[in-house]
Each structure stands twice: as C-alpha cells, then as structure tokens.
Length: 323
Image 1 (cartoon, one colour):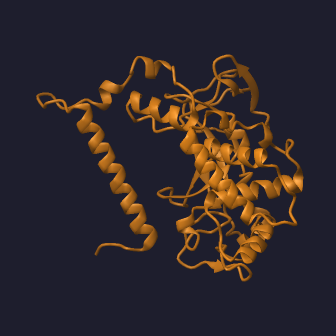
Image 2 (cartoon, one colour):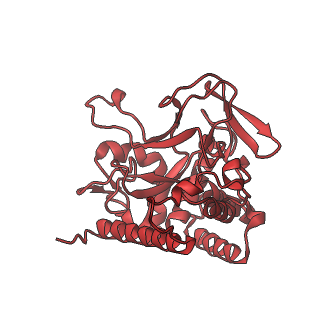
Image 3 (cartoon, one colour):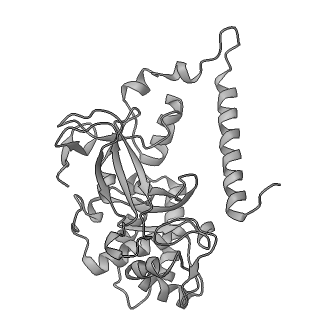
C-alpha cells in the first residue's frame, strides 16, 4: 500500500491520504475481500467466488448450497467454504447472509488471528462497530442474529465471546460493501474490505469504488485475477490530499443524505455541500416557465423510482420477465 497512508484528523478520526499525485481514472489501490457472501435470494444463480451471475452453475456436492462457475472458482473458494460446508450440512440449511458473513470472518480470524493481515492497513478488530450507538430496535435485531449465529457455529471451532461476536455483526452493519454482478447492474452480495473502510465520506468525493469480478478464463492460472474492489480517482488528487468516497447516493438532496448517514453510519455530516445545500437547486431545477415541484412530490417520485427498481431486480432474480 505504497500509494496511501493512514492519518488521524480531529473531525473524522482515521482516514487515508495520497502519498503521490493521481489523475482521473487512476487506480489508487485494489483490495480483495477479507470475507464476502452472496445475498440470500441469489445463492443459486450467482457464483460464490467471483460473484458473476450465470445461468448454469455447478453446485457443491457436499452441502448442496454453494454454487460456482466452474472447478476453478470452486477450488479457489475452498479455503473459505470448507467450514461453511460442514456447518450447513450439520444444520441442514444455510443461515441468512449476515450470519454467513460473520461466520466467514470469524473462521478467517481463527485461521490467521485478528491482527493485521498481509496488505491490510487496519485489522478487523480495529474496525468501528458503533454498537454503543444502536437503538433498541437495532439491539434486538443484533441479539437475534447472535443467537442464530451461535446455533450455526460449530462446537469444534474456536469459541468467541458474545461481545466479540456482536462486534463482528456491528462492523458488518457499518462497513459492509455491496458487490455487483459482472454487468454492474444488480447488487448480488456483501463483503468486508478493511482498507476501504478507512476511506472517509464526503458528499462531493474525489474517489469512487469499482467492483471487479476478476477473470478466470485464461487457460493458465498464472493469468487469473481475483475478485476485488478498486479505488479510483475521479479527478486530480494531489499528494497529501485526503481520499474520500460517498457512502450514500450523492445525487440525493442534502437533507436526505444527512438522514441516511446519521441512521446507517452514526455521524452528522457537516460538509459544505450539506450545510449550504449546494447543488440542491440543480437537482430541483425545472425548465423555464414550468412550476417547480414541491419537496414532497420529489420524494414521492424518488421513492416510486426506487420501488420500481426493486421490483425489477426481484423479477430479474426470479426470472419473472414480462413478454
């Protein structure tokens, strides 16, 4: 990680800054997932290694749960799937994605320990969980997940305390990164990328995150590439400048962004774009002579659009296409 370094700021805590100049499109760093899982409703049609969506996948012959593009993907996944395979067979079914991801994280910690791993600037133990900020509803949901996890976790595996298991669920809630299929059109899974977790939020960021599914099509394995995220520069970034991404859709209105950031990430955004509502007027702009819609109408249209997209994704995942 020669291109970046960790620093501390009074306002945001830890962050990453550039150690050299970057230009638009430059890959600042790439990172493979510490752990990642496919969403519950897509486990039969998305590869559990590269997260590509395929019509025909090969199923694990032992647990009958995990699916892969081919033997190459299945072999690469075995180190992460080995304990999961035995646990699913014993329980009789796979738990939800949060429990599966927490288990994969803890099995890796069991193998390698919770300290810094190769290529990581921060350990999983040091990631923020924000458990102290959970409201009563979130605490109840957390306890349900922890209880289900304990029923799933094998007795022969290393036993972790309730507080530590809760920490893992908390960091998943705050730091989980959504993974997309090879077309980038559908969210298909969630993963933990420790270095990416160090990049702070900005409503007008200088970086974006690209998900790369990797490539296993070459005949020789030496030319294969792993599934990974890539942090890319959106414009000129000077040496010493803080790197930032937007945790939420920066095309949302400033008030909506602030509410989402507070609810999911537990901080109040005080950036210039939020405090001065910069570009809100552009988002609300209309043609000359046309009446300006009210905020309630705009929110209604946005919600309608989101609901429509969810229905389209659901129909696509179930193969329920209209002809």
